[in-house]
Length: 331
Image (tube, rainbow, N blue to C red; front, side):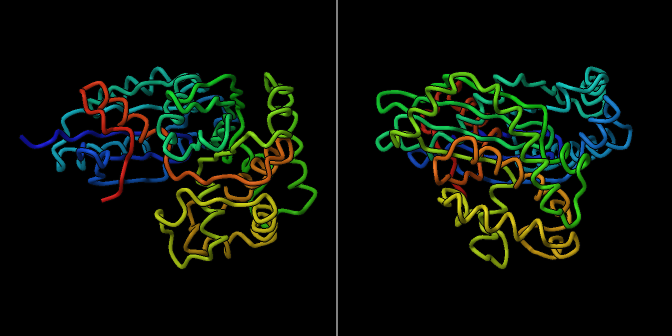
């Protein structure tokens, strides 16, 4: 009997992402298809307080494409989730109802806690519990940034000890501060704005002590971080296999970030590892990441090109008895 096919949809502030996979014995699960479309669901949300009709229609179009692809792949089970825009928007309930009416999808509105748990599940394969006792997991989204303090364990799954969800992401900052060539003063203002939020992080003293003892791994997942990794490697086109799991020093991150901030919007758009859809957002992401690195000087971070979708797939497969769902492999 062939293995069942699963799908995970992550509808965020900037992108609608689909991942279709099936269990593949001891290898984990095999990806059948991945799909991502920029929808800018959170466009103007910081100013308006609700999802715009244009953003809603873009999201619905992307979800229809997801449904077509799932039908073509013979998907048996799907989970579709929405993150920060549907936590903030005044009309989020109406949007979820419209998604159900037009597409038949039941869109779950993830709490910050659930988002962090799924992201951790998706990134677990990059943790190194035999080398580090703890991890800082950083997820820079379009409308929010999550930082989680993780206990790494060799005798069980990792455990979230504390987290902070900040309602600021790359779309939020790009709309507030601009997105063409970013002067040093503007970049510094973004770093400072995010730094003020980080002061509220719980258990800060314990984190600082563990960093001084060399017991902390930093792991970051976001389009910003994968873009920085690809730019650092000077790839002619984005290659997940080379970026996912890459370790970068904070010094290298700072150099690449400064270069991108001084580059024009059109030049960033022409970079094949950035592209038109991310060109106006990447510098804001660099500022957010720099604030995190300044607050917690671990010295290096591991790049993760994985997250919520992989966590959703792992959870569904585990519920159905497929233990091998701990890892997601490319075809």
